[in-house]
Length: 105
Image 1 (cartoon, rainbow, N blue to C red):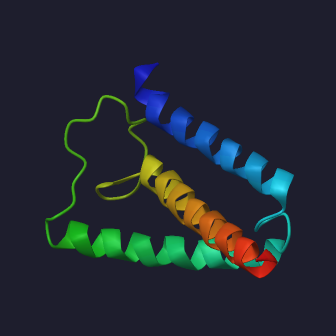
Image 2 (image 1 turned 180 degrees about the vertical axis):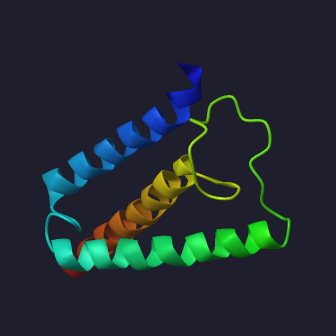
C-alpha cells in the first residue's frame, strides 16, 4: 500500500485545488478551455524538460518506496505527471487569484 501513497497524496491535493477553484471560480471553473490549455502546455513543457534531464543522466527514479512503479517513459514515473499537473494548476490558481484581487482594488 505504501507504494501508492505519493500518487494518492497528489490526487487528494489536486482535488483540494479543484474544490477551491470551484468555490471561488478562479480558473478551470471560470474559463475551462483556457485553464486546461494553459496547464496542458506547461505540463508538456516540463515533461520535455524531464526527458532532456533523463537523457543527460541528471534525472532518475532511484529507490523510491512511495512510488507506484508505473512509468510513462524511461525514468519518468506516473507520479511525475500528476505532480506537474499539481504544480502548474496551483500556479495558475495563484496567478488568477492575485489578478482578480488586483482588479477589485
